[in-house]
Image 1: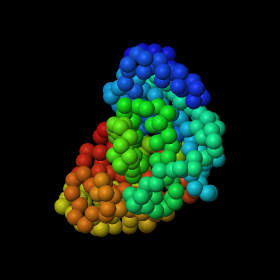
Image 2: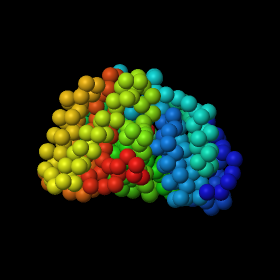
Image 3: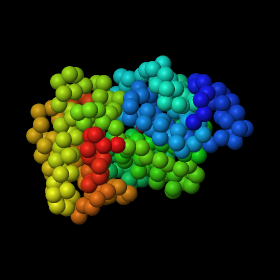
Image 4: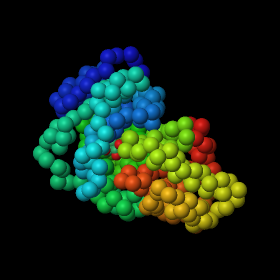
Length: 295
Ligand code: PAF
C-alpha cells in the first residue's frame, strides 16, 4: 500500500470523486465493510486487504436493516474519530462513513437480497431478517465501491459464507477474502459488543471459547460425531452461571448443514447471551485457529 493521507468521505458524492481518481490511476481497490468501533480484529482485515489490492477502503456504517426489533441498534458503539485514526495507522486510503440518508437516500431499499436456506440456519434462525439486511447493505456497498476484492472476518462465519454465496449466485464479480478470527489474550473473540459486558461478565466470557476448545480437543482425541461435539459445547454453556445458550452446532463450512461425521475443516459454532449481550464464536475443527495464540 502506497503512503497517502487518508480520505474521509461522508457522502456518496465525496466517495464517487475519490473512486474516480483511483480508477483514473488504474489502481485496484479492496473494501473492508464494517460497522465501525474498530478493534484489532477489524484492523487485521485492513492489513490483509492491503496485501490484496493497491488501495484499501473501510466503510463504517451501522446498518439499521440488519437489526431486529429490540436489538442493540441505538446503543451500538460509535467512535468515528478513533476509527479513522486506526484505519489510517493500518494503511487504509479511505474511510466511507455515510449518515443513513446518504446510504439509503430514498429510504430503506424496497428490493432486497434474500439469503435463502443458508440464512435460515444458526444465527439466521434466531435473528429473522438479519442476513437479508446484511446482504442488502453489502450488495449496495459493492455497487457503490465496485471493489476488486472485499474482506470479511471469520468471527462472523455465517455472514462470510453467505456473502461468498451471494457473489457467486448473483455473479457480482468481487473476490471475497476471509480473515482470521482475532482473540483477546484470554481467548475471548474480539467483538465491538464486548464493550457491553460488565467486569464480571467480561471475566467469564472467555469460557465460551473454552467450551469450543473442549470440543475441539475431543475431536483431536478421535471424537467424530458432530452431535457429540456440539453436546460438549452445549453442556458447558448451559451449565455456566452467566450464559444463556442459543445454539451450538458442528456444521459443514459451505452448506452450514449439521455434520453427522465431523472432519478437519468443519466448523463448530456457538451463540449465547450474557445478560443482554449476544456473543458468537466458532472454531475450525482440527485447525490451529482453535489456539488463542494462533493466527
Ligand atoms: O460484519 C459487519 O460488521 C456487518 O455485518 C457488515 C458486513 C459491515 C454489514 O453491515
